Image (cartoon, rainbow, N blue to C red; front, side, top):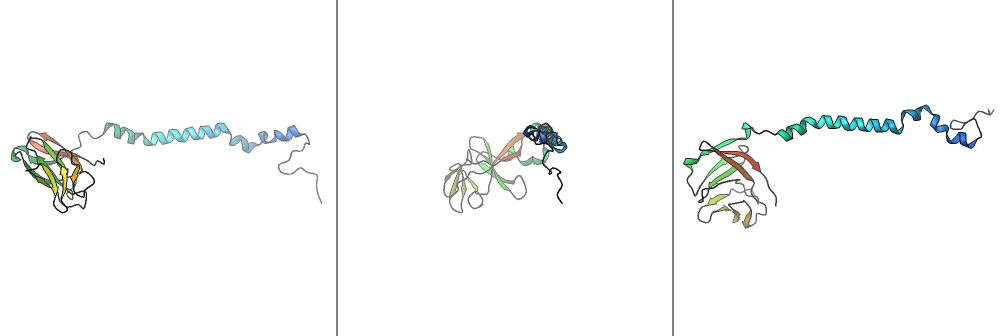
Length: 176
């Protein structure tokens, strides 16, 4: 037995215009319209923006007085020009080298060669940093390799002198 009832997506009318606008009258379409979608998208964007706000503020303000990354190296009076001293920065597993150049400048680098992690030493006569394992040489002024197999520069350690004491305050790993 077949009834003359219209199908699920068919209108009771045979008029084409009624069939074209039939979807506008659906209740479920009113819940998922363009305005609701845009409101949900804007709400999600605002929520994500607010969730990342504390991280953005922390990055902008920074830790200007971060004492935990400051490591005392040596009293400057105990480090004559043309000499160097080994220290560890930023952790106890990272050997580093502070050099007091003949010109009176302080240069500090991590002292593990960027080739095979052999120790790097200061050569006073030539004012270079030397890795004796494979005869790698680094420029004392910027840590860039000048001879041998190393291809990358040594990580730079920023220093500052406060009341005659030299401190390591930051490490900068550079590529280029």
